[in-house]
Amino acid sequence: MSRQRPASSLVRADDVFYELTEINDYIVLGGAPAVTVDRIRALGVTCVINVTPLPNLPISGVDYLRIPVEDVPTAPLAAHFDTAADTMERHRRRGGRTLVHCVAGVSRSASLVLAHQVKHAGLSLREAFARVRARRRVVRPNAGFFAALVEYERRVRGAASVRMVPHPAGGAELIPDVYEVEYRRLIGWADWLRSKGLGERWGWDWILRWRDRARARILEANAQKEK
Image 1 (cartoon, rainbow, N blue to C red):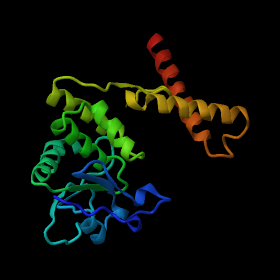
Image 2: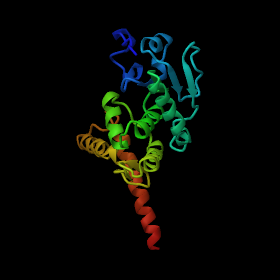
Image 3: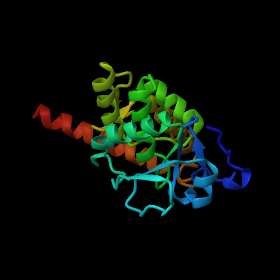
Image 4: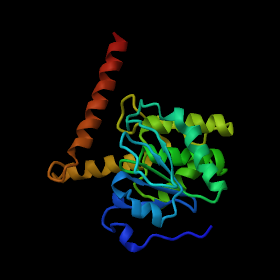
């Protein structure tokens, strides 16, 4: 199937949230602000998976799957992994192309694309995340969705390639290990800014305040255990 590639006018070069990112020949990932009839037509999209409470665009000849799930860690997105992955795969086999979008193209829609890559593309979750993020740099499923993807990979492939680990700032929160280096760099950068008296001015002090509160909760919990 020959495809018409998007012209430069289809994206705003200054804002990735207004981009529709071609992950591969058959999956496009993006956020709601970028979804228009013209873009869908220009990209050769045959199916749209809408992972928001927003209504679908009425476009003839395009299939729709709507999954109105909120972007919160406890949302039941995992219940839709198989349906979304199989829908993308069905259109791929027909020579079609699926656009998967949420509000920003960061968490919900990205999670469904990762589910497809794990189930149908022969990739581990770690490999899939690296490839998808290489194409769309803002991809970042929330920790709850990532934990669900870890379990999904374990079910589909028999083993998990990503681990959920304690947050570097402390506390009970778990994050995927593929985020760990980023968080450590972020905290280190915020520490340096504070040492220079620039943290509050540049808006980074909240990271350190959050870390300090998390550490205080750990100390308080340990003190209670010792009583």
